Amino acid sequence: MSVPRILIAGICGGSGKTLLSAGLAAAWRKRGHSVAPYKKGPDYIDAAWLSHAAEAPCRNLDLFLMSPQTIVGSFAGSASGADVAIIEGNRGLFDGMDARGTCSAAELAKLLHTPVILAVDCAKATRTVAAVVLGCQKLDPQVPIRGVVLNRTGGPRHELVLREAIEHSCGLPVLGAVPRIPDLLFAERHLGLVPPDEHDQVDRAIEQAAGVVEDHLDLEVLWDLARQAPVLGTYGEEPTPDVVAGPSKVRIGVCRDSAFQFYYPENLEALAREGGSLVEISPLRDPELPEVDALYIGGGFPETLATALADNSSFRDSVRKKVEAGLPVYAECGGAVYLGEHLQVDQGQFPMVGALPVTFALHAKPQGHGYVALDVVGENPFFAVGESIRGHEFHYTCIQPPSAKDITFAFQVRRGYGFDGRHDGLCRHNVLASYTHVHALGTETWAPSLIRAAARFKSQRSQVGAGR
Image 1 (tube, rainbow, N blue to C red):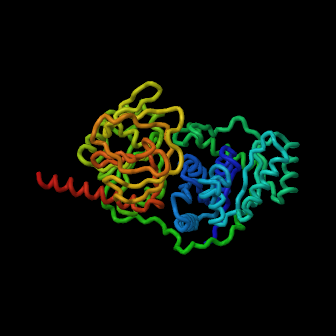
Image 2 (tube, rainbow, N blue to C red; image 1 turned 60 degrees about the vertical axis):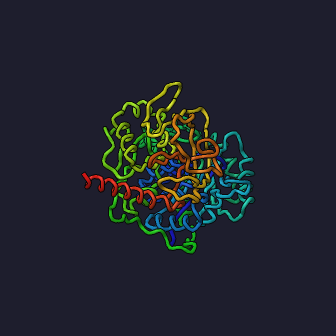
Image 3 (tube, rainbow, N blue to C red; image 1 turned 90 degrees about the horizontal axis):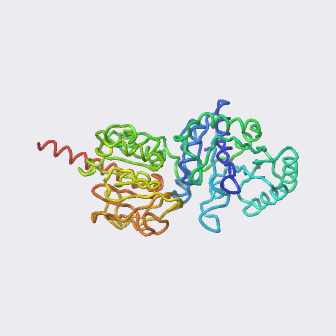
């Protein structure tokens, strides 16, 4: 399989990777090219921006959540129809889980044999930038670094010195120089960008990013570098086939609006492939929960819309009643918070669904942030006891002491924080509410088990109806 591809990496977080990746995707799309976007790591927000820029689903590639074979198969299958693939790295090029850079963007670039373009923040530095780039080249010569983009340059003289230093010392082409842009529309919040679903100028922001790339980067040379990517083997596996939904067996409700927006495309595709008919639902707008056989509530920022969620009492009441009737519910992070009794935000307390007799409180600093490894130790609707799960977490909320005795935890935390540093996965009735986000390609039992739980509930409901 051969597809032109590049990976936009940085020296550290905040180096302009998303601006350049989104801008490049939009610029190439404007020229009539189909772009397959990817995000290295588990991030939802950067991926959402890339999806908007490329007008195509952005998929995550993560060496902690997925095996190398799975990553190669997923990439080969999803990129095969595109003119070019753009992978945005995360953090710094060599930053991973440990001092060896395990699961870093560098390791992903080597796995996928993808040319790396290094974005460097040049503020208040000149020749030292060349030393940093040279260090990246020397640290692991197997990483295919093919060019540099200068970011936040201070003017023509600054740019000239940087270019000469890098090209002379590193032997790499400088493919563009982006000056300081004070009025960028990519606002930040919670250690990252504001999600596009909450941004009031998404199209203008994408247009601005495309303009930055068109004005300051050499698109022709970048295109040529992408086309130089070698043929990619399948690592012993066939490419992932196109998603074909199986026969519809059950209706799976998916809460999706500005409050709940964090879903991997592969998770939704896996549910459809297993026979789920997906029904999009808005806890902000819908008057009540429609007739579904299971409910999937992803992550998001319910704290920013706590008033609106609380005001829709009819929807909250309908969810609580369905939970009491046994509806299977899988909830992640913000979805778990929504199922609690209350959410405390800035000294205010907002009523939530009340399906879990606990209160969540928002804090100023992250309560859990990073990769998670869990062992399933308690009975629950979706995972077998003894199973191991990998995922990630990023939450500013934490649980308050339970007010009921019928709450149990399904997971023991080996890595991460979860609810208290030891446990994750609150269970009650057929609800499993976890701070951990899972990826269907890494946790392959997740989608089939959710569909089975939905089928059991549907069958039980039919039996009850037939007995009346």
